[in-house]
Image 1 (cartoon, helix red, strand yellow):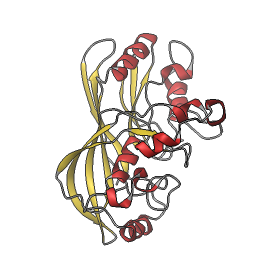
Image 2 (tube, rainbow, N blue to C red; image 1 turned 45 degrees about the vertical axis):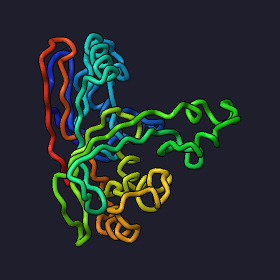
Image 3 (cartoon, rainbow, N blue to C red; image 1 turned 90 degrees about the vertical axis):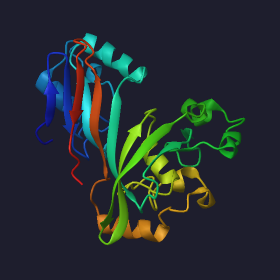
Length: 264
């Protein structure tokens, strides 16, 4: 793994900008490098345990700011801040097509996708009815969890082109912080994230975040445009970056705010 891009460090926490393509925490295949292990190897932790440094995660293909705890007090404090939603995080993303509204909110509850496990989708009455009578021992308890209320706010930073194709640069604020929330929500308004091989065009997850084509807004990116953008992007990383994070220090109580520039 390349050298750590450390944004902030003190005796209690470390803030690192994670590159795309790196796991936040170790996976089942421990041969893949993880940011968690790299930070633990460099700084250690009061508990002597790598897993006791983790307070939140970014997906492997998402770049940007990650906070790790070095002390038990910082771990407890950061967990409380995230649980009570007192951490403000903003992301930058390129999405397919030109988003007409300068800003807005995406308010769709999310659920596990029974047809495309283990991915997420927008929860609908039809999908909830399909879960009735299923045995949790057979399908797993996570699949039968209640829908999670999920809210994303967006602002259009600029309307651009990628290889001659329309794309929009957005600032995304995840209010609820659900699994794959930004990916599903962007797909569900017809503007999937550029380079999203799971929730975007031809991905393994339900298309359009699980919504019907007729439910999408009129400014949606056509499948032809999405295909053209996928070709123009090639094998480059998914274009989503955790660009800023703000919170009160879990021990010193100092107000902290950090930023990291996107590579796309």
